[in-house]
Each structure stands twice: as C-alpha cells, then as structure tokens.
Amino acid sequence: MRFDPKRIVKAVNKLHHETVARWHQVEPDNAYSEFLGTVCQQHQYNFLLWHEEDIARSPDVTDARIAMVKRAIDGYNQQRNDWIERIDEAFLELLSEASVKPATNARLNTETPGASIDRLSIMSLRIFHLEEQLERTDVDAAHIERVQQRLARCRLQQGDLAQSLAEHLFDLAAGRKILKVYRQMKMYNDATLNPYLYQSGKKQAA
Image 1 (cartoon, helix red, strand yellow):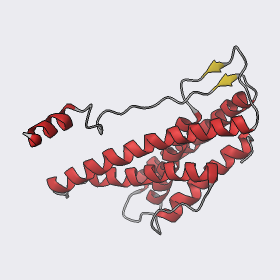
Image 2 (cartoon, one colour):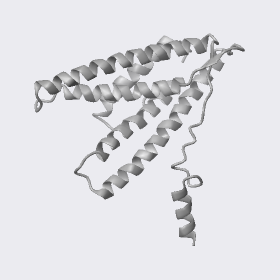
Image 3 (cartoon, rainbow, N blue to C red):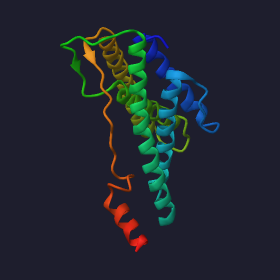
Image 4 (tube, rainbow, N blue to C red):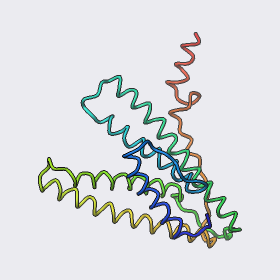
C-alpha cells in the first residue's frame, strides 16, 4: 500500500466496519494481505476480546467458566498489544519504501498510529453493538433515546479520531514527526516476571 494518509484511514475504517458485521455471522477470518492484513489481525483480537469480556460480566456463568474467560482475555489482550506494535512496524516499512526521513527537529506523538487504529477498532465494535440495541423490541423509548445519544457521540469520536490519525500520518509523511515502536513489555503473561507464575513453577519443581 502506498503511503497515502487519507486512503489508508479510509481503508482501515472500511475494513473495521465490514469485518465486524461479517464476523457476527461467520467465524473471524482474514481475507486481507500486507498492511491491511496486519490491521485485520489486530482488529480480530479486539473482536474476540470484546465478546469474552461480555461473558465475564454475565451473572449466570460459573466460577470455573469465569477463570477460563479471564485466561482467554489475558491472551487476547496480549495479542492485541503485540499486533499494535506490528501495525507500527508496518508503518515504518511504508515510510521507508516512500524514502521518508524525519527532519532533525521532528516531533514525537505520545500515541502511535497503531494505537489510534486500535481505538478505531474498538469504536467500530461499540458502534455495531449500539446499533444492535436500536433493533430491540423489548425496550422502551427512553432506552432507545439513550442509545441514540451514545451512538451519535461515538460516531463523532470516530470521525475525530480518524481525522487526527490522518493528520498524524501526513506529519509522518512530511517528516515533521517521527515514529518509534515502543514495546509494551506486558508482565502478567511472562513466566519470568509475574511472581505468581515463577513462584508456582518453583513449587512444582520442588
């Protein structure tokens, strides 16, 4: 994909919108390649994470099921963050292919493009599920009005975030800003850093 900020943001939003709808009908898949394939994979972990969290909040599931869900959530969240980094790495490749070099006084954003795309992914899920609420027949008018208000705010946030992402990408393309990939270094899934994991391993060894 050419480093065209408007085209990239439009393609990302289209991917998020279309896959969220499709994945509620079929098993999550990834029909994309290259940069969009990376975006789709990251989005898929958000999709899986969202629905596991729905299960975790249900009062009807057993403690054993909650424990399974918690482990699944940890795994998906780890993958979600890993693939945010991969999106940023893909952006670095696109910038390199376009022979873009940051200026000596280039500034750094606190949020990377990958993190912005992650937020757009979550917003697409939120909008889909709010739209589902409008189709319910077992709720009153007050519920529908609340949902409509939330949906309007979410769509405004989605538009603002997409615009901000495009502006960030334009700055990167012009060399006005620099992109760095920061590793999340999550500790909870690391058997050498999480005390409960490495202490458990020592007990089992003994």
